[in-house]
Length: 244
Image 1 (spheres, rainbow, N blue to C red):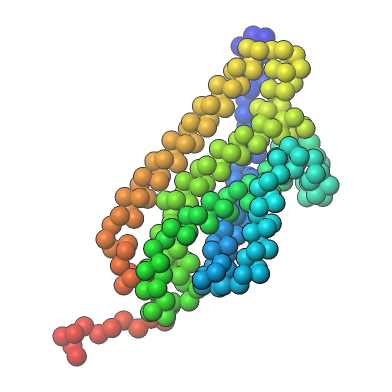
Image 2 (image 1 turned 120 degrees about the vertical axis):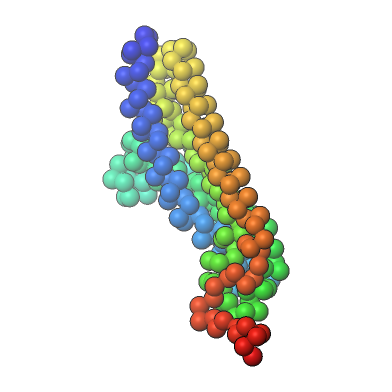
């Protein structure tokens, strides 16, 4: 296979992979982030402590993480067709990709949020901050670098999942690898696909690392650790001592 022939196949497949990973990444963050935070809030000693709910959520997450992605794709074909209208193509692949990645990302979010200093949470509570305020003003901002690192790890995992989706007609670079690299023994083309995947993963990791470093430097500012910087709804500012 010539380079020109490879290019005609690579660009559409690359675009399909990027769309597949992009859509599923956004959906995973939107659904996995609140699930991870809820796992922390409902745990023992949490702000919304409810052990039965926490155990049910934890069991669902554990089951989702334990299923190999290729099996999950086959098991969810009915749901995929109901949502996407088909089980073939990158649009259909986003459904199992998202469902498979949500438990993975939720656990990473849970770990990141648990690392927030409990003293900051107590300080906001002492000023009358509600649970929603604590989550919005303290837990999420303070864990933002770790959350970005978690999102980066999840996106890279989704790229690997998207390659497996090609085995069952999910499209993208994985589909090319199966059809040409495996079924037609185009070894050279297979290595080109591998090299492109390595480049994509490396670029995403570098972008994620840069964002984490910048957010970490910004979070190191003394002002970020001051409870007074939290703007609580309805909070009445204290009068300066000189006016009393």
